[in-house]
Length: 211
Length: 211
Image 1 (cartoon, each protein chain N blue to C red):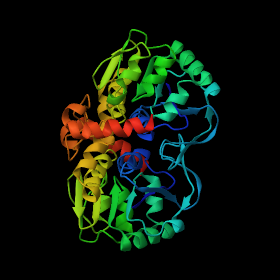
Image 2: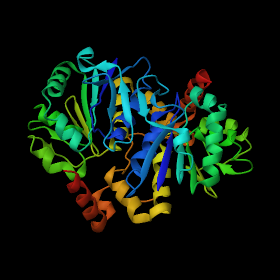
Image 3: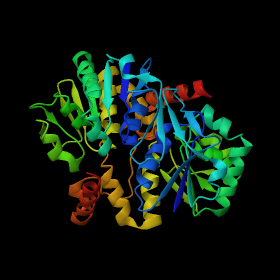
């Protein structure tokens, strides 16, 4: 089973590393980080790069693919014909086509979310709707073979769900135990409803700065 | 505030990317991925590399540092004098010295956990005790300025705790909301107590294969 993780300049690293750390535990999984070019690709913060040898053209028809989000980098990727062509071709043959966070904007830009239920980072719902998708406020949204996850860390939950779909719940639980995913955040501020108005307002201001 | 993330061959990527995605949101944080050499460093699965320009010698005294785990790679790092010297020097001047998963074995190998409470991946507790630490079954263990987190995903919780210690709870909540960390795993199998004996046994067998 070939599982491709799309890498592009300016991606949010946890969007892709969360699902990777789960899905790479599937026995026999052929994990491919794919990018327009081989070599280092700088993440959104600029602090480091992710390197891969696999170009898009080398992995045209993965069984499963995962598209991460970001902000400026995602907007650029969502306008890149080479990336969009790859996404469409991969989706035409995939078993599951997935995204994390604003990665769904790239699925949308490829024309794959018209009238489909989908999710994204909570602060990007209007942007998602502009692609024709029906924004759905859930952590994971399954629409046929397209699975979209909410912001950043939701990719871990999505990957556990997907692992169970692909190889059954026992291997999903094994992956969960292996990464000791028994979350215990010291605060309960992970969604707009829980974080409170002041924190939400501040987050929206930060988000707006990067648009 | 300079925050260093130790990168070495064979690390588990989520151990470092989870905390990074939280701590990099601290306003003005100077984020440095540091390694023995600049250039790409391959992660434990071999699927991709993490690239950085910062060598250990360039970042000798970060305010905070995070050490990730792995398996074979961690054992090698825990015997590497250059890495251990860096850890000891950094710890001598740090505000917080932290680890995720089996990263605590490196703190231990550097002699920093003698008679200290600490944690690690649940399957590595005996290895941790061999360094002189007192294994403590908690998701985050604070012992003075040393903070150790349990397996892999626990680094996210640790980083939120640490953010609150460094810059207050509001900025920690803002970071949590930004990565939409409102966990909803589809299974409740993230700890040995919850996963059930059969899954735990299988996880231990997988772990033993890599030792």
